[in-house]
Length: 206
Image 1 (cartoon, one colour):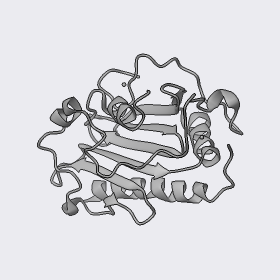
Image 2: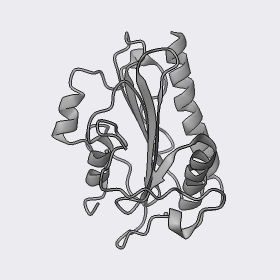
Image 3: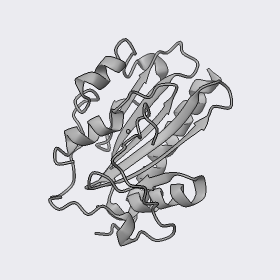
Image 4: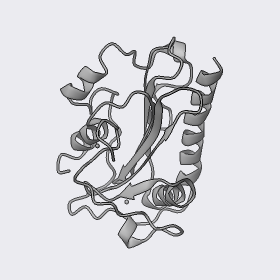
Protein backbone atom coordinates (compact mmCIF):
# COMPACT_ATOMS: atom_id res chain seq x y z
CA UNK A 1 0.00 0.00 0.00
CA UNK A 2 2.81 2.41 0.90
CA UNK A 3 4.67 1.75 -2.35
CA UNK A 4 1.51 2.27 -4.38
CA UNK A 5 1.02 5.58 -2.67
CA UNK A 6 4.56 6.61 -3.60
CA UNK A 7 4.01 5.66 -7.24
CA UNK A 8 0.71 7.52 -7.33
CA UNK A 9 2.33 10.54 -5.75
CA UNK A 10 5.18 10.47 -8.26
CA UNK A 11 2.78 10.26 -11.20
CA UNK A 12 0.69 13.06 -9.73
CA UNK A 13 3.77 15.23 -9.31
CA UNK A 14 4.64 14.77 -12.99
CA UNK A 15 1.17 15.86 -14.01
CA UNK A 16 1.21 18.83 -11.66
CA UNK A 17 4.61 19.91 -12.95
CA UNK A 18 3.46 19.59 -16.54
CA UNK A 19 0.33 21.62 -15.85
CA UNK A 20 2.31 24.30 -14.08
CA UNK A 21 4.85 24.55 -16.88
CA UNK A 22 2.18 24.70 -19.56
CA UNK A 23 1.03 27.98 -18.07
CA UNK A 24 4.32 29.66 -19.05
CA UNK A 25 4.57 31.75 -22.18
CA UNK A 26 5.34 29.30 -25.01
CA UNK A 27 8.34 29.62 -27.27
CA UNK A 28 8.47 28.65 -30.95
CA UNK A 29 8.29 22.63 -30.34
CA UNK A 30 15.29 1.92 -27.20
CA UNK A 31 20.08 3.61 -23.83
CA UNK A 32 20.26 -0.03 -22.98
CA UNK A 33 18.34 -2.64 -24.92
CA UNK A 34 15.19 -3.74 -23.15
CA UNK A 35 14.33 -0.31 -21.75
CA UNK A 36 11.52 1.92 -23.03
CA UNK A 37 14.12 4.63 -23.63
CA UNK A 38 16.40 2.64 -25.88
CA UNK A 39 17.19 3.78 -29.41
CA UNK A 40 20.54 2.66 -30.76
CA UNK A 41 20.30 5.10 -33.66
CA UNK A 42 20.21 8.14 -31.38
CA UNK A 43 23.42 10.13 -31.02
CA UNK A 44 23.95 11.45 -27.48
CA UNK A 45 23.42 15.19 -27.40
CA UNK A 46 22.83 16.45 -23.86
CA UNK A 47 20.25 19.18 -23.58
CA UNK A 48 21.97 22.33 -22.43
CA UNK A 49 21.18 23.48 -18.93
CA UNK A 50 19.52 26.82 -18.44
CA UNK A 51 17.42 28.36 -21.17
CA UNK A 52 16.42 26.09 -24.08
CA UNK A 53 18.81 26.37 -26.98
CA UNK A 54 18.55 25.59 -30.67
CA UNK A 55 20.84 22.57 -30.22
CA UNK A 56 18.44 21.10 -27.66
CA UNK A 57 15.30 21.63 -29.66
CA UNK A 58 13.90 19.30 -32.29
CA UNK A 59 14.08 20.43 -35.89
CA UNK A 60 11.55 18.30 -37.77
CA UNK A 61 11.35 19.23 -41.43
CA UNK A 62 7.64 18.57 -41.77
CA UNK A 63 6.20 19.41 -38.33
CA UNK A 64 2.76 20.94 -38.74
CA UNK A 65 0.93 21.97 -35.57
CA UNK A 66 0.63 19.95 -32.41
CA UNK A 67 0.67 16.16 -32.37
CA UNK A 68 -2.55 14.51 -31.25
CA UNK A 69 -2.85 12.62 -27.99
CA UNK A 70 -3.68 8.95 -28.75
CA UNK A 71 -7.30 7.97 -28.34
CA UNK A 72 -6.44 4.95 -26.21
CA UNK A 73 -3.41 3.42 -24.54
CA UNK A 74 -2.90 0.47 -26.88
CA UNK A 75 -3.29 2.36 -30.16
CA UNK A 76 0.35 3.55 -30.45
CA UNK A 77 1.87 0.19 -29.48
CA UNK A 78 3.07 -2.40 -31.97
CA UNK A 79 1.94 -6.02 -31.83
CA UNK A 80 5.38 -6.95 -30.53
CA UNK A 81 5.18 -4.53 -27.62
CA UNK A 82 1.61 -5.52 -26.80
CA UNK A 83 2.70 -9.16 -26.71
CA UNK A 84 5.26 -8.27 -24.03
CA UNK A 85 2.52 -6.62 -21.97
CA UNK A 86 0.01 -9.45 -22.43
CA UNK A 87 -1.63 -10.50 -19.18
CA UNK A 88 -0.74 -7.30 -17.31
CA UNK A 89 -3.85 -5.26 -16.39
CA UNK A 90 -4.19 -1.87 -18.06
CA UNK A 91 -5.69 0.99 -16.05
CA UNK A 92 -7.15 -1.32 -13.42
CA UNK A 93 -9.27 0.83 -11.06
CA UNK A 94 -7.87 -1.16 -8.14
CA UNK A 95 -4.56 0.67 -8.65
CA UNK A 96 -6.23 3.96 -7.79
CA UNK A 97 -5.42 7.37 -9.23
CA UNK A 98 -6.73 9.13 -12.31
CA UNK A 99 -6.20 6.83 -15.28
CA UNK A 100 -7.20 6.92 -18.94
CA UNK A 101 -8.34 10.12 -20.72
CA UNK A 102 -8.13 13.22 -18.52
CA UNK A 103 -10.26 16.41 -18.51
CA UNK A 104 -7.25 18.47 -19.64
CA UNK A 105 -6.85 16.41 -22.82
CA UNK A 106 -3.98 14.26 -21.56
CA UNK A 107 -3.94 10.45 -21.36
CA UNK A 108 -2.58 8.28 -18.54
CA UNK A 109 -1.78 4.60 -19.21
CA UNK A 110 -0.80 2.29 -16.35
CA UNK A 111 0.11 -1.36 -16.83
CA UNK A 112 0.21 -2.93 -13.37
CA UNK A 113 -1.07 -5.96 -11.50
CA UNK A 114 -2.74 -4.44 -8.41
CA UNK A 115 -1.27 -7.14 -6.16
CA UNK A 116 2.30 -6.53 -7.38
CA UNK A 117 4.67 -4.72 -5.02
CA UNK A 118 6.67 -2.86 -7.65
CA UNK A 119 6.31 -4.04 -11.27
CA UNK A 120 4.59 -1.36 -13.38
CA UNK A 121 4.80 0.78 -16.53
CA UNK A 122 3.06 4.15 -16.64
CA UNK A 123 2.98 6.58 -19.56
CA UNK A 124 1.38 10.02 -19.62
CA UNK A 125 0.69 11.82 -22.90
CA UNK A 126 0.73 15.54 -22.06
CA UNK A 127 0.08 18.43 -24.45
CA UNK A 128 2.96 20.86 -23.75
CA UNK A 129 4.45 23.79 -25.66
CA UNK A 130 8.13 23.87 -26.63
CA UNK A 131 9.31 26.36 -24.00
CA UNK A 132 7.90 24.61 -20.93
CA UNK A 133 8.83 21.19 -22.31
CA UNK A 134 12.47 22.07 -22.89
CA UNK A 135 12.65 23.83 -19.53
CA UNK A 136 11.59 20.55 -17.94
CA UNK A 137 14.02 18.46 -19.97
CA UNK A 138 16.88 20.86 -19.30
CA UNK A 139 16.15 20.71 -15.58
CA UNK A 140 16.21 16.91 -15.58
CA UNK A 141 19.51 16.90 -17.48
CA UNK A 142 21.16 19.52 -15.28
CA UNK A 143 19.80 18.59 -11.85
CA UNK A 144 18.97 14.88 -11.99
CA UNK A 145 21.53 13.40 -14.35
CA UNK A 146 19.24 12.47 -17.23
CA UNK A 147 20.90 11.77 -20.58
CA UNK A 148 19.24 13.56 -23.47
CA UNK A 149 19.22 12.92 -27.22
CA UNK A 150 17.62 14.47 -30.29
CA UNK A 151 16.32 11.49 -32.31
CA UNK A 152 13.29 11.17 -34.56
CA UNK A 153 12.74 14.91 -34.91
CA UNK A 154 12.23 15.32 -31.17
CA UNK A 155 14.03 15.49 -27.84
CA UNK A 156 14.39 12.43 -25.59
CA UNK A 157 15.71 12.27 -22.03
CA UNK A 158 16.19 9.08 -20.01
CA UNK A 159 17.60 7.71 -16.78
CA UNK A 160 17.62 4.36 -14.95
CA UNK A 161 18.43 3.59 -11.31
CA UNK A 162 18.29 0.69 -8.87
CA UNK A 163 15.24 0.54 -6.63
CA UNK A 164 15.98 1.27 -2.98
CA UNK A 165 13.31 -1.22 -1.86
CA UNK A 166 13.54 -4.09 -4.34
CA UNK A 167 16.28 -5.73 -6.46
CA UNK A 168 14.88 -4.26 -9.68
CA UNK A 169 15.67 -1.45 -12.08
CA UNK A 170 13.51 1.66 -12.21
CA UNK A 171 13.57 4.29 -14.90
CA UNK A 172 12.00 7.26 -16.60
CA UNK A 173 11.93 8.22 -20.27
CA UNK A 174 10.56 11.42 -21.78
CA UNK A 175 10.11 12.23 -25.46
CA UNK A 176 8.87 15.59 -26.75
CA UNK A 177 7.95 16.67 -30.24
CA UNK A 178 5.31 18.94 -31.81
CA UNK A 179 3.82 20.10 -28.50
CA UNK A 180 3.33 16.59 -27.12
CA UNK A 181 5.32 15.19 -24.17
CA UNK A 182 5.37 11.40 -23.68
CA UNK A 183 6.47 10.76 -20.10
CA UNK A 184 7.08 7.14 -19.00
CA UNK A 185 7.95 5.84 -15.53
CA UNK A 186 8.67 2.14 -15.07
CA UNK A 187 9.86 -0.41 -12.54
CA UNK A 188 10.87 -3.97 -13.45
CA UNK A 189 8.78 -3.70 -16.63
CA UNK A 190 10.52 -2.37 -19.73
CA UNK A 191 9.19 -3.82 -23.00
CA UNK A 192 11.78 -3.76 -25.76
CA UNK A 193 10.96 -1.09 -28.35
CA UNK A 194 8.25 0.57 -26.23
CA UNK A 195 9.11 4.22 -26.80
CA UNK A 196 10.11 3.67 -30.43
CA UNK A 197 6.75 2.02 -31.07
CA UNK A 198 4.90 5.05 -29.72
CA UNK A 199 7.01 7.52 -31.65
CA UNK A 200 6.63 5.61 -34.92
CA UNK A 201 2.85 5.46 -34.50
CA UNK A 202 2.40 9.16 -33.74
CA UNK A 203 5.07 10.34 -36.18
CA UNK A 204 5.25 7.89 -39.13
CA UNK A 205 8.15 9.89 -40.54
CA UNK A 206 10.30 9.13 -37.45
